[in-house]
Image (cartoon, rainbow, N blue to C red; front, side, top):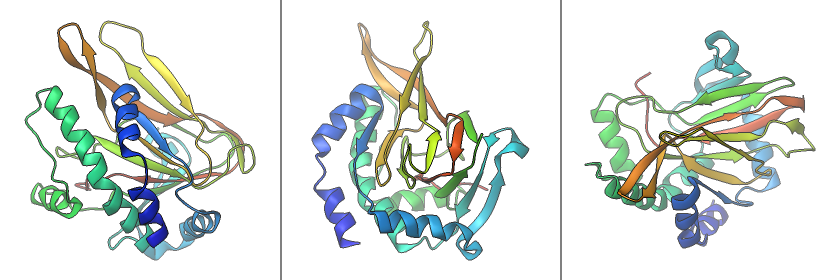
Amino acid sequence: MKNIVHKIKNTDWQDITETMHQNGYALIPDLLSEDECEALKASYDHSVLYRKTVVMARHRFGLGEYKYFTYPLPEIIQTIRTTIYPYLASIANSWFNVLHIDTQFPLDHQEFLHQCHANGQQKATVLILKYGKSGFNTLHQDLYGEMYFPIQIVLMLSEPEKDFTGGEFVLTQQIPRSQSKAIVLKPKKGDVLIFTTQFKPEKGTKGYYRVNMKHGVSEIREGNRYALGVIFHDAIS
């Protein structure tokens, strides 16, 4: 765990912040080792770790499956979630400030979870996703309740073009009075992709405005794609 904490703390957070401001997403390469990725993938079949399994086709979310972890989270996930949160909270606070949204997030993750729990949101939202051939995920936003954190991360556990083909991470930007913009990303195994949960601020001639964003996964052509989604707010159900 010390190695992961060291990598997070030694990330160029000024560059990440500027990239998030500009694009609504940013990448931290090689946070997880090969062994750490494989261990998380192997945990997919350990039912005691999870509170809920979702078969995506039943809800028209796409084609694949994901499982929500239960508390307490595995140590590696807990470490990543609590260590990276303060850096993202600073970005989130600056976004809400320029958009004149009267919310400021505490820099301690446990304090933020206390706020979620007081709002009736007490269930873990960290999830592991598995897609096989022809799997995909429709465009969506992970909100889970009235209280949400506006930035989340996904850790890629499989290697593109080796473990699977296709399966690109897709973001869309809906700019007011304009056509949507699609962004296609291919994070590698062990990479962390940081991205907005719902929107990013954009500076216009009359100040900042909201650019709404959604995310999804394109169709897997061959193989299996595993990823770990870390959402920082808890859920009602």
